[in-house]
Image: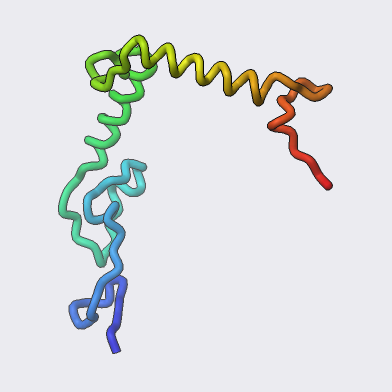
Length: 112
């Protein structure tokens, strides 16, 4: 019978470990200092993750990302015009009618 353990030692057939603990991913003060006794920390990537996510947030909020430099897929002007026409047609066909509260009829939940 195979045995799986959490900190049960080398005699088990398998270990259940949280990879966040293995890689030191969590930056809450408690997690930054605490490593479960049954876990060996192989890296400390939590700070790099925090720094990276903060830089991403700052770039999004400032408008630096996403820019043309990170938009490699282009649509020709003709295709863009066709798409806009299709969207406008779909919208007018399905969303013009509204109920008394201003909700599009296609979005109104009906209870029978």
